[in-house]
Length: 432
Picture 1: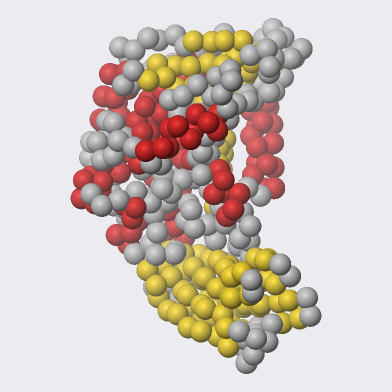
Picture 2: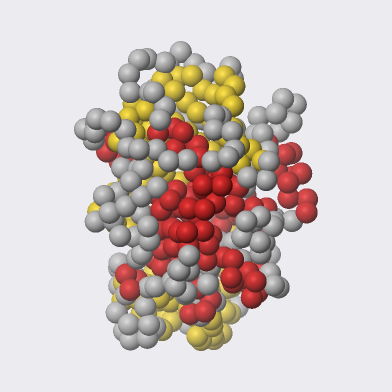
């Protein structure tokens, strides 16, 4: 999905192909509305010499990309700029698509208006046995070898930080791989954990001389095999189809099962590391990585002091029941065994994990109001379930599925927060 993310990053509020661009704005600068209120989108199709006066614009209003609410064709010769009006009667995201044929390519832009987003709820309730299922799966994993395999990476180690390729036993005889970075200097340090976005994973550690860093890929292949690139390993993995759909609808064999169990084991091992102050642990991630922030925090309510989740995936899989798009990877819309999949996906819904995050965890979330991969209503469905007392969500207006400077700024905030947080004495008790 990383390659998809780069493609989607092109679609901002001003979408350019060649010398033509579509620019969209709203009559409310904050893009926030109350239900029943009219949102007014202003659209311009501009070229080098001013507004386009030829061709048509296809306009679609929808419930966050899924249910079509209105369509029309706009004659640019008669109307450019033009306005599009719409509303929602229930909390959600009113999404505008504009498509313009501009030779030799077709332009496409997306923009979103949020209607009482803090009242958006998941498309289905959490299963009654949700936490019982995961508690049982974690307990079953205790029979696996407890200690990780570590190999010092000469490629990454420097005079300040030792970097190790690290792997943990996971269900089905698999292993989960990542990189551990440990400052050479004596002492106990805050720790930061990261899971990458979807795609092949990463081959580098979090190289920080004042933090212990752990980055864990979700995949079952070694990311650092001599003579083989991580891209080649990934291509071997997905020959039979996209990895996120492997093993479904069996909830104990779906691909993310071993990833959640394995990375959860890595997290709790890290909490017991002699150089880690387990009261100062943080997490950051985007997309798939954002989802794992909710997942790991929900499984370990008091493990992290703070987490940062940018455009988190895997949220509100059954949001289509409310007529809106579900978050990546849209399990139900891309598969045929719908009834069985609908039974499975709630156990892998980051919104359900989010409901179990500890009240004392500081949570920052960033949502793109024009995101069609991890659509904003799905992110809000998860965010609104978080019981943390100190939580905040940043609306990136006109942003698709991407990373903007605010995310990098928030990573700096996370580091500074952990640096300044007083050491809490004895580490928090670590599970498996």
